[in-house]
Image (cartoon, rainbow, N blue to C red; front, side, top):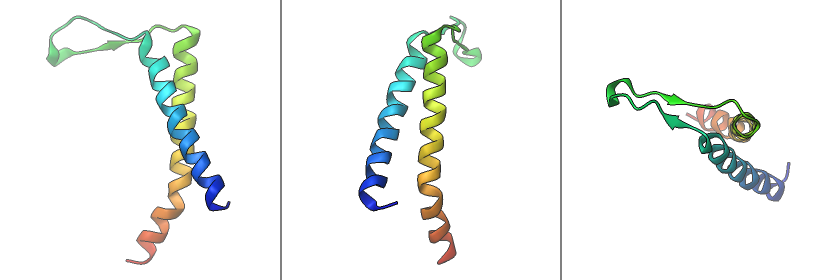
Length: 77
């Protein structure tokens, strides 16, 4: 993969991650309990599920992009 395609994929992955987090957290709300027992409750509607899927795929793409870099860094140590 050339550098331009890699950079574009990284930018799209970061944007997808941000949009997915916004969609996921749009319907989230606190349980209203004390901070020590703080719980976040998600509703299971289509927006939340698609947001979770987008976050998972974007995170997987970012990890896949940087695994080779990390291997090269660790190889040269």
